[in-house]
Length: 289
Image (cartoon, rainbow, N blue to C red; front, side, top):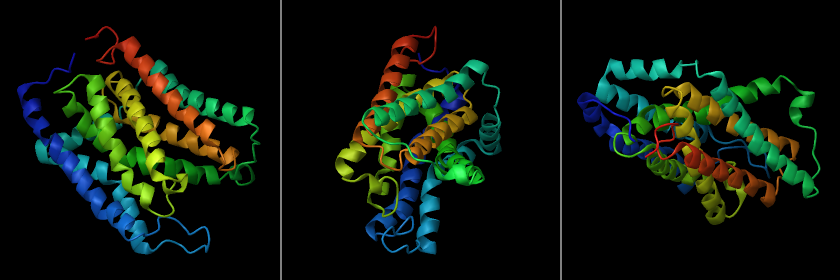
């Protein structure tokens, strides 16, 4: 069952495809340019040369393109009311204890399984840098909040998801959004210095990455539709998935291995399938299609 929108909201839903076009245009003008001209997004590991100022500006602007586009389109189709709605849903912190537990627990479960597979495969854990420099966790936390969660969720969930839900049920909406969300990341696999580029061969690595992102999209929608459309809930879930992934990489010394990496992907897919099976196509209890 799709969310019921009034006629005014349905008219506003016409901004959906304009949002995707604007997001992709901004991405191509930033990350696309970086990929074509091989502009570094991080210091060169072989020479220690830092990225150029222009490269860093383009990299950051590209990362914020969904939230920039979502904010622009919210203003374009609803004016100040659209911006107020985004803000109100961003500060919608009252999600309920069970949903906070899910948002925290699922990333810990998936990353814990990855760490276990790494250990069972003979991997040796190392002391992460923040043990010697605890204050570095503050910088990591701020970075994990701003780049990815905050820079994307005002667009993907804050603007696009509601409008997809006027046309399709929550599961199909999640799959559509997940595919577009995944391909938005594609240039990162060709930009020197990014985590995606360092994964290796872009064809198989992007394929696995895309499957993981689509599974995450289902889980994000599940949280979103059950927490009164809270953008904060989506941001927090996004942040914790990224944060815990980085922590696992730190304690494995950056050598997680293919088996542990696939464990994360499979774990997220299994969770998405379970959620869809239990909650139905609408991803809400008592509202099965």
